Image (cartoon, rainbow, N blue to C red):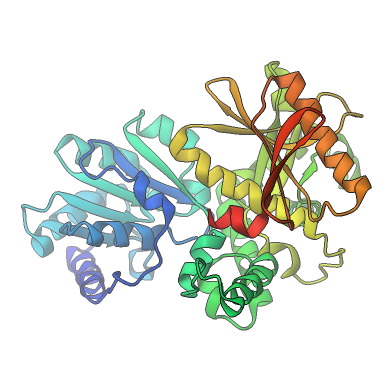
Length: 425
């Protein structure tokens, strides 16, 4: 490409960068995962519009780091090739000076051979921050292209604590008015989810539909050259409508008329790789069972109801479970823990989440909308205490719309958490 065009684009981006005021931007938990003095590339991946670029700008400016910025998601750079990357670096030196050592690259994975360029930057002493569209910046590709020279940071839409922070709600106040505001915010959060841009958009359905369609058409269809895109849409709708349920590949194959379960697994895998669908594996010491038995969750509960023809009952229990799972993924990342579900047989009572660390079961967590009825209370606590004995784990939690307390059931101590208290803790 013409160097003048690249220089013009980067100059405009630098001007935009100088006008950013990140001081009042919402704090994200993932900010603590960045390694500023590391020789590894800092790579932020996640679903579209979850705030990947925003968090990078925020942490760099918060730490008073002088950095260069290049966003290749610009219509003037559509013809950008690997051979232009050296020109890009020359333009960066011209605009930011030859002493700049930090560089943030947005959407660079659109360029073939980007990994070689990033590796070269790392070898020459640059600290590199990379973000990009989720389907083109996956762990498998990073492992192949950057050969372990990266720190992966997964970013999800706002947690409920971040949601309240964004709305400037006082979550610690004990007044009736303050607590009512938090409860009202939680009802909104369950329904509309935590995509940052969605907070100020009235037509939330159009936003969500556009987001899902972009993931399917741009991140998946373009990448994998799929012809049968309508079947992919149908499978995506089915998994969204059946969040928190086990994925039966044989039934999906029959329902959507696919050739084999292998093809079905590929389609579901595309949605997982694009971070639209999240999977959880069954807890088992047998690798085959862990890989075979999975459940599907949605990256954000706002996707469930904000779609056309979303004719499904408003199952708050499933939505709460979905929210808890994503929050557990956030909390497990810095602790290097794994999250599973427990259901040893088809007829066994299920425990929603098993938290493991280096192969040891650390905590069992059950989620329910309500536990006021004796039948529901017995079902949920029996599942927890049964699993406690089988897995030799006695750190038990039950999260629901209940008062926070602790009591003994079937000889086991169970902590009961109000879901709002737990999410804000």
